[in-house]
Length: 258
Ligand code: PGA
Image (cartoon, rainbow, N blue to C red; front, side, top):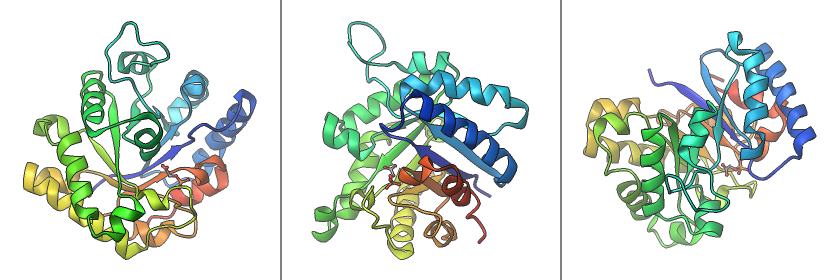
């Protein structure tokens, strides 16, 4: 059995007080209501990571959820104003980091090459990369969606040794579904997840392919999560908008087996 997994990507939302309120609420709601067999990760903006870890530590005996970052520098350290390194994230005891999100690709020039560099640094620092891949609407309409995903995986990840690859979480996030309210259908999502798993199997073999968590992201809601998560190759979700409301987030966490 693969792990079930739900990660919340807060993006650039909330001020300090609002973040604190949401984290307090999440700790309460997730510890009281969430299915215990789902790994839950919350990825707030960098500036709230310390607070998030403190709030989780208070509850650590209950292991409510883990904390991740939304991005990391492609450089190790030094004169890179504004950047945050993998070592910094690891030294705070966060455990995960999103890489290659389409918003980073679109607005900040992230490429498969920088994804590869970032993944390398995260693994060196024992952080788990959540690596996003996804096609645009135009690429889907032009029928090149599978080629796009294959290139993103090959250039961003398939340089890894099998041992390292086994620490990766993949998120399939069709760009046209992110923040648009237009969730991929179960069929569209499962088709791509199955394809991604087949590429992993080709490269790393059956066992690693079977174990790699592949999350769906893109307008996932409490309404759409149950049937998406029921697909054989969908192991959970990377949740944007709906992770900003504790009740919606916990409903999504509880969507497995519904
Ligand atoms: P969304 O974002 O759920 O708001 O569509 C998902 C993501 O970008 O990770």
